[in-house]
Image 1 (cartoon, helix red, strand yellow):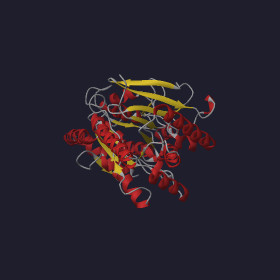
Image 2 (cartoon, helix red, strand yellow; image 1 turned 90 degrees about the horizontal axis):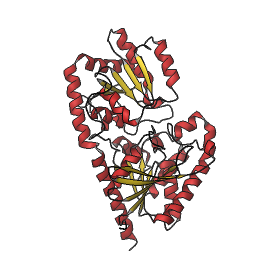
Image 3 (cartoon, one colour; image 1 turned 135 degrees about the horizontal axis):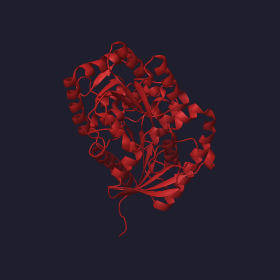
Image 4 (tube, one colour; image 1 turned 180 degrees about the horizontal axis):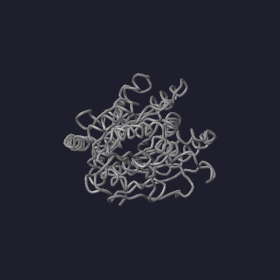
Length: 412
């Protein structure tokens, strides 16, 4: 029987490349939710070792995945492994790949539109996916309506008058715009770079079968950090806080789960502060293993900061994952984090970039098990109310469906 569902093209540069990949999976997870109502095709950049075409399946739902080429295998290094901004900062010469990346994506979108006749496009990130989608929307009559979702780095870290104009142009051309936190909407409004009808809709977390309380890899003990080892994650403040707690004679251990360009400097910091026996670096782990590390910890710490480039968390779903696993959460008080952590209700907030205050908040939970349990339990209830993929999928499905209907009404 022919599939009569509307067709949806999803554009993203963060997507699993192969089975067991440690790339973030939120674009994939949302695509599965949208596949309940749409025939979904995902277009992502190719890289060495990834298939050009394949089908992903989950719980009876399937999405078709296509990957576009933009250079030789050895030079397709602009995306993945920390994201495009991070990779360009590590090697600025990679910026030379951007024109080929944009052209490769544009040509692939045109080919796919002719093949599938999409009813809508969902572009994750203003740059570069939003640029390509909105440029085609502006100049090609066959291009369907476009939803652009900003996740944070494409908003906060791209500074300067020219980039602000580019952001304003993309978001102004899009048929619908979402950001993942109230803080991002406020930022857009303050900078006058987005339409007034911008919607706030976070990504989700699998709180029903994956990030759930239970027995982890060890009895629940110590602290855990999960994330990329980059500046905006603020791990150096957490290591300093551990050294403060040790000097206060607290029996504390920290497990750092994740990898990144700052790993060696953070390991050196731990040695210099003489807490290298208290701080373990687990490195990158499979996405399926992350819940075990969270379940094994008493407290999950999210010391995110504003990087020198301006980059910062768009939302901070790691806190939601921790709450789902029964961890109490301590975080630095950033605007985007306030959507997930309510101080004194679902977690504790410390003064940003203040390792002493971070240590104080951690000590409160180490010393008061009843408080830790209360925050963990109320935090999980809060997460279930707002951040399940089922709820997020329903909201995004509604946004896309309304966008399609509006476009059809206009062209009648």
